[in-house]
Amino acid sequence: MANRDLTPAQRLALARHPDRPGTAQLIQGLFTDFFPQRGDRLCGEDGSILGGIARFHGRPVTVLGHQKGHGLEEHLACRFGMPNPEGYRKAQRILAQAEKFRRPVITFIDTPGAYPGLEAEARGQGEAIARTLAVMSALTVPVICVVTGEGGSGGALALGVGNRVLMLENAVYSVLSPEGFASILWKDASRSAEACEVMKLTAADLLELEVIDQVIPEPEGGAHLAPQTLYHELDRALARELDGLEKLRPQALAAGRYQKFRKMGANALRKERA
Image (cartoon, rainbow, N blue to C red; front, side, top):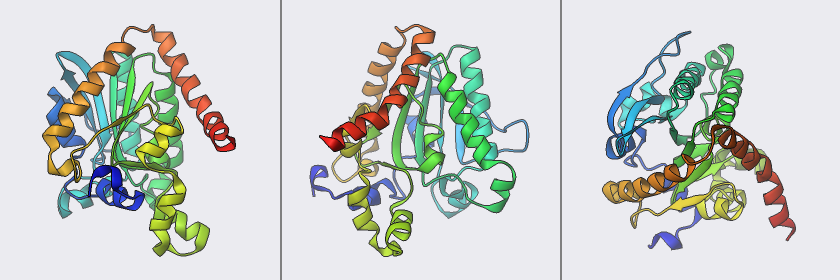
């Protein structure tokens, strides 16, 4: 089946495919000289957020994203890409360093949501997400965010406050999982495929609603079948967006990002009424 004929539920399945390129693979395929940074300097290290310094076409950048891992051992170590508060505080530290040294920021979003465990809540999960949003909002360097797989809830949005928000063709981006949506609305998680239709979570839906700025095409059958083809498309898109953003003044970058997100709800409401 061609990508254009896929249903939202089928795209969700591809977004969750265990062999789909994750942040580590994207960094390896797109950047050079990657130097990872670990720890939040407060509590500990969280492997579900991977980030550090790299070079993109020779220019220094800061890159970070959610990390689900591959294989059971990595999945468990990364909690299937669901960060603890220390993961988001590590992200804040990396973002603050990018601001200090004037490095553009590129983020990769792939998480079902922040980790919902009792320990995470006790260590300030909500505050950590909120502060990460605040830090990203105030950056005066270019910020490009890419939804690469499953983008769910505030755990995804925490790394999603960009001047440009791109999305892979078979990625999804939503306020919560379709299973959670179906459980709340219909008290039946088995209706998740129906929820996918209602939630408008595909790249095409979100481009129409002006939540994202560009859809990155994937190979037929999904990115996991030909990752090098995906890297080529994403490399071109990132280079083009970065070239444009680096021409803007620092305060214009922060102001433009603020206005972009302020307009999102109004744009969606206008389209719905039309």
